[in-house]
Image 1: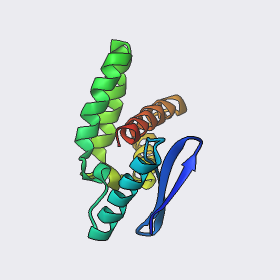
Image 2: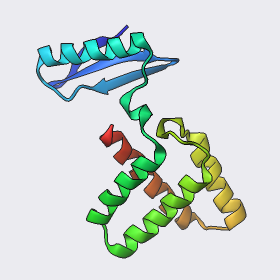
Image 3: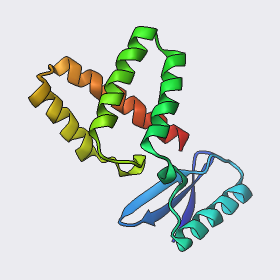
Length: 141
């Protein structure tokens, strides 16, 4: 069952996807548009189609993030961030972004500390770039 609600002037939908509760902004303040979008979400759920963001591969988001980072960061910072992100993507055995879990991130960071001998500051830098990567992917949908 999909429900429609408003936060401020923006309409949102809420529904169950498997065992998790999903709340997603419809990015509209028009109720009629929101009702149409809600009907699309209901139809997608009834047909068992995955969310659009679940269809994108991890490497697609890395390329999007690469362009975003290159346009907004200094060259050396961009190179360091992309090296860290590539290190993570190379170590995780997932093809779809939606399949990456916090356990994957934790295992990666633990392995870097235990095997690579990196310090707390470097761990923080890895966390920062991974956080920025997943936030950027969330914005892209």
